[in-house]
Image (cartoon, rainbow, N blue to C red; front, side, top):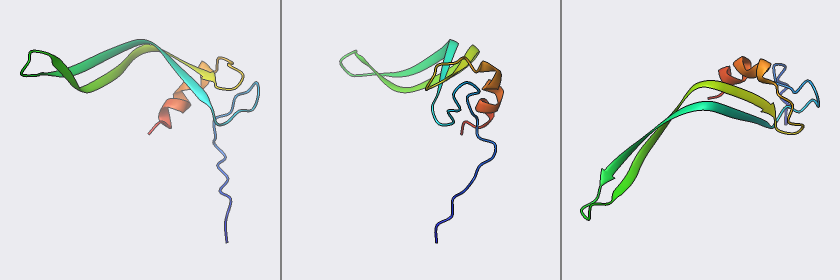
Length: 79
């Protein structure tokens, strides 16, 4: 027996009702890349960390409406 799970707190675009596709745009990102030097003197990236400093915007992935007002809720649910 299969049950449909209803989630009542889904984020929805107020313009088109989309509740699946969203686009986050960050205006200021600090990227830290860690490198290891190879025996031939070249470098290979081994890890990268990105930190969003500020300027995050949120858009509907279907109609492209700016829904940044909902960003805080979006950010709370990114795992």
